[in-house]
Image (cartoon, rainbow, N blue to C red):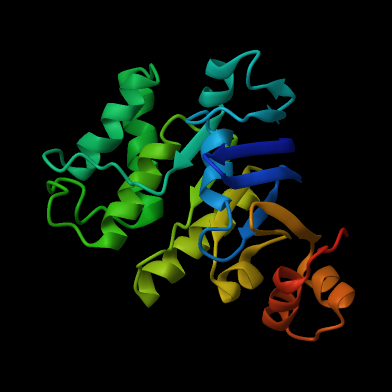
Amino acid sequence: MIELSDLRKSFGAVKAVDGVSFVARDGEITGLLGPNGAGKTTTLRMLYTLMQPETGFIKVDGVEITENANAVRRSMGVLPDARGIYKRLTARENIEYFGRLHGLDEATLKSRCDALIAALGIADIEHRKTEGFSNGQRVKTAIARALIHDPKNVLLDEPTNGLDVMATRALRQFMLKLRAEGRCVLFSSHIMQEVAALCDRIVVIAKGRVVAQGTADELREQTGESNLEDAFVKVIGSEEGLSL
C-alpha cells in the first residue's frame, strides 16, 4: 500500500505539486488522472525517490521513505516517463542487467526473466538489440525490467502513451494481471477511456492539487454527470474541487 500526505514541490514560482494526499491499496489499480502539466509525473518522481518533497510524507507498506529509502525502492517497480532502455543491449540483457542490480541469483533471474518475457509477449524480440524497437516494444521491455525483482508495488507513468491499439490492449491486460496477483498498481494517465476501463479508484489532479478522488461511479454521482469524461471536465474546472 502507498500513502501520500500533503506533498508539495515547487520549481521557482511554479507550484508543481501543492498538497497532494491519497492512498493506493494492494489488489487495486489506482489511476492518477489529470491534464498535461497537472503534477502527475512530479508526484510519481517524489514517490520513487527521484525528487524530495518540500513538505509532507510518503509511506510504502508502512515504511516512511525518509526512514528507509532503500527498502522502499526494493518494494517498488517503476516505469518512468523516460523509459531508459539501453540501446546496445538486447531486450533480455536489459532485463537481466536490472535483475543483477537487485542481487538476484542466476537461477531466479532466468526464471523470472522467462516468465516476464512470456507474459508480456516479447519472446520474438528478446534477443534483438533494443535500438530500432517500436515504442510498444520499448515499453514492454521497460516494464519487464521494472518487475524483474518481483515488487509488490508497481508505478507506471503514462504506460500506454504513444502505443498502438494492439499494444495498448495487451498492456491493459497485463495491468489487470498485476492487480489479480494482489499488487498495488498506481499509474498516471490523461486518457479517460483507459482510466475508466482499468481503475478501481481514481485520483484527479489539476494544477498540482487533488480536486477529486473515488470510484468512477462516485465521481459521476458527486458531479451529477452520467459520463465520466463530463465529470472529469467539471471537476478540473471547479475552483474548490470535490472530496469523496
